[in-house]
Image (cartoon, rainbow, N blue to C red; front, top):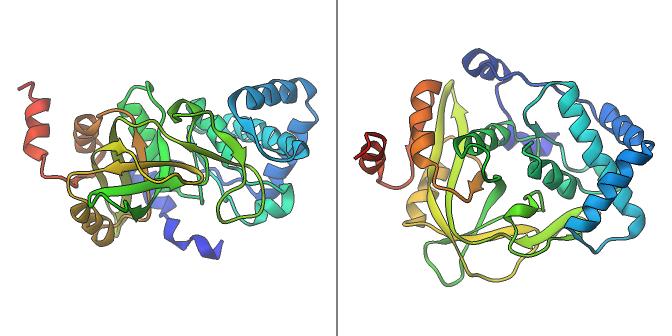
Length: 291
């Protein structure tokens, strides 16, 4: 849609350079897949039980089956088209058709190791696949917005999104609730676990692709909505300059692991320029040499 211009990508280049093939799924096909899922009593019973076990339900009970149906439908479509990840147009057409936000359904698939990212962000889905592969699937990625600075920590930043983060990343049981900016249910609210993190973002301009990456760690901060985590980096202004001046948009992926050296080395073989936001390149090279 018009409002999603920042997440545009070059499908031809992705195919030619990286053998990444996209499988566009029209809204009508997705909605029909949800209806088919809701007609499958066994699949719905299993998914509804999973939702009730995983989340604190804070939305009308009659909306929960739509969340379950969407999760089942997306998984089936991923399998049908042989995909490894997905990116969804999460607003506003979906709400007109289903009456829910897709965030919690995204979180369910993300927990399964099938990254589903928001706002049709294809480069975000690629980032999520790279980050989780670098960690050999041990942890799940958290697709996030770069948002606002910490009120008290000059190097603190809020990573947040409407609720697509997997339950395994949460510090508390997530609430299935409403998002900050919309009136439809289906989002999650939970702070993520603290700890050491890698932050990354794959993007490109004019045929040149790069991977912004570096380290961070979780810190305390004001309570928020959606799935969120306050993080601290060595120099936030340096990171902000990279985001503003580079080809990068307002999204990134975080993971509870230090996979910076792995991603740095992978860039060599993928034809991607590694773009470290801290001056640690010599340390990374030394690590890769076994020093």
